[in-house]
Length: 604
Ligand SMILES: Nc1ncnc2c1ncn2[C@@H]1O[C@H](COP(=O)(O)OP(=O)(O)OP(=O)(O)O)[C@@H](O)[C@H]1O
Ligand SMILES: [Mg+2]
Image (cartoon, rainbow, N blue to C red):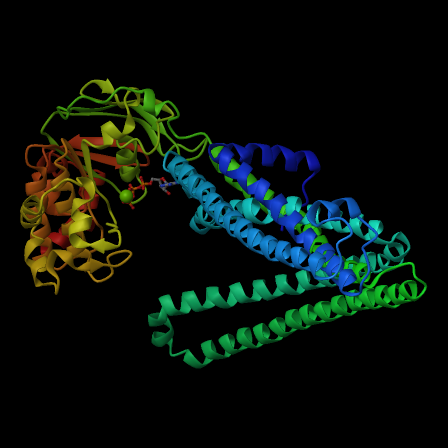
């Protein structure tokens, strides 16, 4: 658990969280009423049984007679008193079971409703946040906001509300009734309650410490396991199986010890708690018998007293525990609100007009940009691409080529200057309507888990099977897909593990072909391919670029040779422009690059 929250912080956060409860107001009101009803039912049983026992002994109960008189005829004795009481008991038992059932069902479903709403709200907001947000955070942490932290809302609704309302009602009721039955007896036996609470918290503090150590070690073991299993290739390559096993054995041994420590503490806590509550009951019984023998108390009252006493301990612990539940819940809620409060990349996006159908003219007007403040990744970049033109971006690694296309797709916004399509600044339009008309084949092509067909359909969910096959054929992917066991229905893993780099690229090209964008951006993979795969991809790429404006970050000679123009980049600037022949004719970066990079490709 993180730091403790002050009362006003807790109230503020809970108040804000309650916005998510608002749609379920009537359900929650029912739940709260039922919580109280169930608690009151629980309080009725010991008294009822106490009365029965007194009647069995031929005594008329001395306390709460007005209530008794409501139930049975005045001065009734023997069976005529016992039978109605037993019938009421049975009736209450059924009524309580029904109330409990309804309460729990309503509570669980409402809790889950709220959690689902919260999860959807977080995911929806996450989708609007800038890429910078994700770059600054670990994926696992962001995922945990949706999975774990949102889940704590369920615990808040189901756990804390029952404890605070139900257990508090029971505990207070028991207190009052104990004193009402016999205040001297109540005072003596309640001495054990603080002892019980102190014992509980003393052990629990230690147990928390042990549990934390247990969890920390265990997550280390899990992390180790994940990494080694995912990278078992490395382990085998270095033949370090034995060392790995030793490390794992160490982790497991520590887990064994930690587990035992936690368990021991838990057992010890349970045993001492039982001992103390037992001592409390024993004291009450002995004193009660003494009072009975002196005629100040009845057996039925003692029975009821002991019954109430046994109802006391559980609720007391849970009420104290509710504090922890709330603290944890508040911590989770704060993390969630921190995400919901993060300003989206384009806050006004929904209000912006749709970009009309693109012609395909692209202009970078004096664009400067840095991923971080003060950094100049792009420096006064200016160029224009005519509709249908294909240009190649060339330059050393880190020159800023990929950055140019991230600005065109508006993953980021320039710090100065403008990006225009068809002479319209893209920043003035709804970002999805811009991106929908731009197709991007990235440097590393990630496929989502699902079938090949699902992945192809990603850019256009309504595509028919025939269209999918046509796109795959055009991308030279159809043949290899058909050779897979399940064809288009073959599943690909998280990153399409079962496909080679070249195959993945062709799937990615087909995916973009299906989307049929006006503007095409292609970040050629740097990985070398054999000449046959190269040929297939080159052919697919050419089809892809036909009738579209295309910007290709070129790593292949064939691409630059075909380009209408080549922009040469270095250190965030465009340093030269021309055709392949023109650029090769004069000394400069392009010629150097050609000799270094493309010439070897040309040789293969
Ligand atoms: N997300 C990012 N956050 C911070 N800096 C980045 C980010 N992406 C790229 N950079 C930096 O910006 C500069 C330009 O990167 P960019 O990816 O545009 O180069 P590139 O020309 O595409 O190189 P390559 O040919 O290796 O793909 C590099 O110095 C890089 O370190
Ligand atoms: Mg790049």
